[in-house]
Image (cartoon, rainbow, N blue to C red; front, side, top):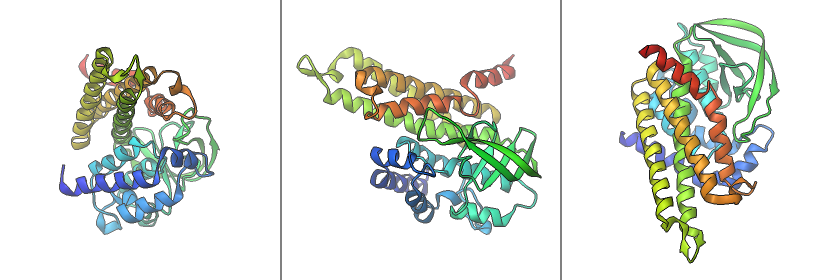
Length: 313
């Protein structure tokens, strides 16, 4: 990883630590727009988060997919609700056109406009707040110039979803495989969340005393946490590989590895925390819901397996 990307990660991590505590995340999720608008403004102005994948000549930062993945991973660690995933995908969709709409790109890169890409009209990330909506069906991209939205009921309060229905549309061009890019970016976010969920669990087992000893000192729990660490690090390696060399195969592998690792960590975190983990006051229940919600977003793990099987058999 380059020094610039290390600095980007550290900067985002510092903003999350200062402005996105678990209490702040809950407050943001319960707000009208579903995210902290002041934090989003800081991410856009101080980090250039919304401009990372946009070329400099079009008003962006001229970064790469890996830069966006780093930011999403750090935001995922804190379950920070932001419009970054949808906005980044909308920018990539616009950039794939023969003549990109510079006005739309400028608003998205500045963070003053919110974007999203529709893969499943019933469950659209940031669909309730999006200004720029583009649909991708694997063959073509379509700009929805007029649309209606209906908030969707989701288990995960930190990721607002909505059903979006088009009224007027304009063809944009060929789909460059946007679903694969979305899968890779979502997998990066999942790895960040899984890593933090494991950290919280390890810390709890150090603090929780049973029979006069921290429960983390018991060998059985040590073995379980070691297995979880291996699962998270293995998933991260797969995701990092997909980020550096995107393809349909690497995207499916990344999603499969990240979904399985995060779901496993979240389930074990509930077990190791005991009954407190399923109370509203616990942060673990938020990670558990994010794990299962993310695993189903953009297609469940079994769909990724079918894609991989089709290439082997």
